[in-house]
Length: 178
Image (cartoon, rainbow, N blue to C red; front, side):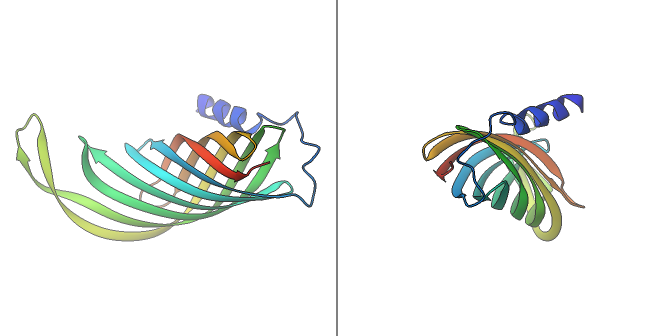
């Protein structure tokens, strides 16, 4: 837990003491993030975020496609749609933000109903059932950028009553980031 808090603190406060003089009340930035997230529930996901920054606030529309793997076999797929609002801190080549919001998940669960192949490397047979649920989303990210392209690190979580997760990943950003 202490390591997690330390990592989140470092990501968020990377640019605390280097304020951008060009970052005025009337400045508006928009950029697109795409990346890969590795989560604690053995899932791998890709994400696409559209971020809008105005003054010291950031608004994010987010889409995640999670696939949980069981022995490299497809077990379930979760699609998360989120809207987040947060605080952003800027410097000349870095933006760090923390955001919280709401998400809607569309999940297709895979229940194992049998298997084929050897016991050493089985292939599972699934029965899939769809489930929808509502949750809370959290994102902490930092982007290092130059002109219109950036690379970033993010820690993301989704808290809900069925399949909560926390994950970390990398992303590439394109747009008016400054």
